[in-house]
Image 1 (cartoon, rainbow, N blue to C red):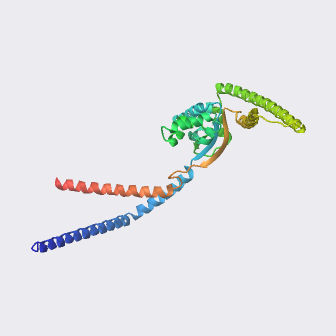
Image 2: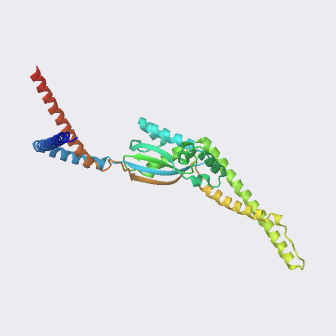
Length: 329
């Protein structure tokens, strides 16, 4: 064992010496690379400054001229017209992609169809509104949640189309007005003979329901008034009076409360039933924010210089290989 110790020490010293030499070599190579880079920038300083000026100027120009804007419209499809609404939006978007300005101008009614770059629609997820006063929807969500992720179910296309409100986003490359763009699109979405007939019948049904509910509430009031008079007359007599718990008085009062709530909901619903696709709100000319939006004055100079460096390396590599091939021949 004592004989091997000097050899191990010598091997360790050799290994450390090799590692030290390699580190020194790497440092020298790195220093040489930095020096060559400095030389490259010094030799091409005029070209690099020119590229910086061109890139910054072009970036400023594109940042100020190549702006896009988002127009956001919140709509509510009535009378189970959600699928119809989505199909109409898909049709408009397909015509925009095709560049069919004739259809967009004549059929949709857009004043400046070339300013429209795209249109899309997404549901506004509101599960509470979805299950509000709709026990069947609540039970459906519970049943579907047992077999899968509740978040995926709520965002599923089949479920999401049944939400009350949906957001239409129109992307344009110029500022627009409601009259030139929003109104024509909404008018186009409401052009449906079938849903207009459904609308007429739904309005009639709502008015009939309101009238019938008012009649029932008046009848309940008459019953309660008669019961109150009977109670007062019995209190004035000397006889002891017993009341049966099964008079269903509580049920009558609860029914009246439910009917009054229903009347309020119906009156609010009637406000939005004047159109098949009802516009609730619109936000116009919101500048579209993207990753490179407003940053081209910084990105373009970098890209131009990077391209110049890559091109210089390619030319240098080509010249070296050409010279090497010439020597070999």
